[in-house]
Image (cartoon, rainbow, N blue to C red):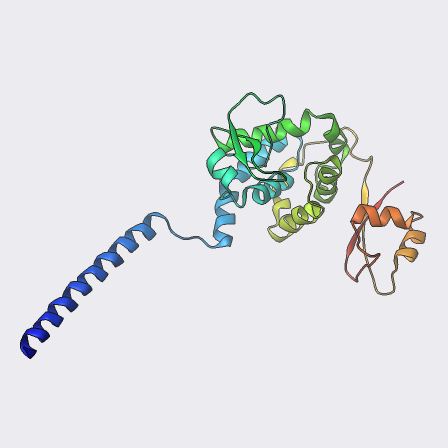
Length: 247
């Protein structure tokens, strides 16, 4: 009986080992087809595919490539968000009344909102350009210097592109962390019609600065500084960049 038991155990062990090997082989095959990418690899893959498209859109529509790419990365979750995967929508553009194309529904500010669905992500990039150039509320953006990505970031928020109060800072953070402004170098021959108008100045807070001293320095009301920079409890910190509008 002991011998039978040992043989039984041995047979059971061999069978189990075979299953484990099969599972391991299947796992390797799946991993080979769908390698798990790190966040940096996802970003690199996204930029290699869409940076050339953003540059072409910039040359045609005068929208900074850095801004377009930062929005695409942010809105699409590096191309892996549901709207991007299922609808090729990389900019979170909703249907609106004039949209006659395909639709995809997604929870956003409200549940089950209507978003535009495209055949290819490139169509999403073109629609993003048209969306900004054909709506009057975005017209003032094109008075900005095309290489002033900070101004464009805050301008998009001002025009109502996103409801997130930190939207400009998120775009700026992406642009600076990933050096997306390098793609704006291709705009060297692009001149906006009023590139010297409506410029913003960015002031870095130093030791001893207060909202009162900064308001006096630039002859601007404290409430204006607070509103433009979305400052909570009138608190500022050393190294913080504040938007100061030129008069």
